[in-house]
Structure formats: structure tokens, C-alpha cells
Image (cartoon, rainbow, N blue to C red; front, side, top):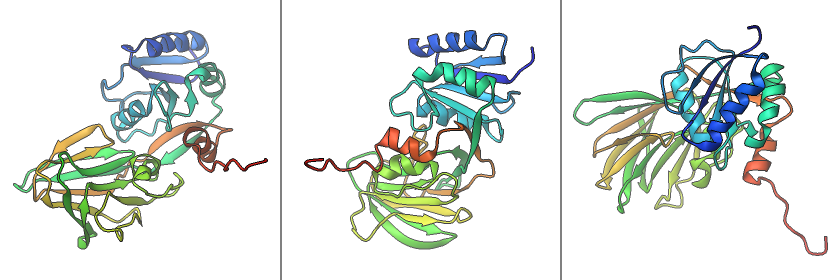
Length: 283
């Protein structure tokens, strides 16, 4: 069969997604080469030979796919079957558009997204990772006590945070947990780290933007008896005092497929109600 090679990913245990996978396969029949179908969270996707990976699901499914792709440069198109679906280029009701315009005719652009990698250095000398993340690395308390964290940049202590934790986000992750913690929105074409303290005890601890080549180390030095680490909210580690998490830019960016006619700011407006105008009386 000639045509674009497509690999489909979706949780067939979810009825809506299962039906959509079958529907999409039918729409592409004879028009594109569906080289495989994989469930959410299944095998590594790095060796998949395809022109486009289509993920049917929410942001979590896309985040998982970004890790499973590893160094692959194959672009990923998301069709949202979750709640917010900020990373997904299309909504579930646009499945026909996905098939016709994007998959068959290739009318999409590729947004190259910076990713990070987090490596856990245990106080006893053990090392875990690196774990690749598209959104963020979060060091946080998993109990009711506040957490004390040394914030180290390029090997030198910059400050010490006390509060609920610290988020180190990519520009893609700047519109996720980091935004809820008061961090800025960063246009995804920019390469930078956004460091946002979570409920810091000092009002002087504000979010910080760092260069992409700087290396951030978060050292657990006190407080919470149950500190924890989460990468993209999916890969989690229990920590102990003295553990360090080193975060740096990954050498392998993620490639997100977007419709040619859709901009980042349109997505902000549609999904986050960004830049909405006040309702003036008499208008």
C-alpha cells in the first residue's frame, strides 16, 4: 500500500477510544498504511517505522508516548479523548479532519518541543534514571509537613526553598502544574527552564526562568518525612533526606504535530480561556 505510514496508539479498554480507533482505521483504509496499533502504556515506540504516530487520549497519553518514543523524531498527533487535552492538536469530534487533512494529505506542521531528563542521586550512592520528561519534574511533599529543598544551579547553591515543593518545567510544561503554582506561560518554541516553588513560605520566592543549558539540582535537606519525585506526573520515586535530583535538557526533543491553521495562542484561548475580556456593564 502506498501513502503515509501511521501508527495508532489508544487505550482500547475505554469504549470511546476503542470505537474511535476502529473508526479511524476505517477512514484510512486504502488511503494510508496503518503499520500498527498499540494500547496506552504498551511497548517502546522508538523503533516504530512510521511517518506519524496518532495518539487517541488525553494529555497523559501523549506524555507517556513522548517517553516511549525516546530519541525518535517521529511526530505525534494527539486527538483528545480526555478532559483538558492541552497537548492534543484536535478534539475527539475532529477525527474525520485528522484522517482527511492531516494524515492523508499531510497538512500539519511540527512543533519541536524541548524535553528534560531527571536523574535521581540517592544519599546512599545509588543512581536512578535518567527519566525523560516533556512537562516537568516535581519535587514535593507527600505528607502534611512542609519540605525544605536546596536549589542548586550549575553546582552552586542559589537559595533554599521551604514550602510544598519545587517544579522544574519545560516551556511545554509551563502551562501545566507550573502555571497553577504562579509560573509564567512560555511560548513552546523557546528553550528554557521555569522553576516554580510550590506554596513557598517566603513571598520573595518567585518563579524563575533559566537558560536551557543550565543544570538544576534539587537537594532534599529537611522537613517532610515523605518527600517524593514525579516526572510528568507519571514516573514517581519515594525520596529521603539527602537525595538529589539533577535536571538538565535532554538531547532528544519531542515533535508534536499540529494543524497548519492552529496557533499556540488559539489553543491557549480555547483550552485555558486565556486573555478573556471582562464583561463590561452596558456592552
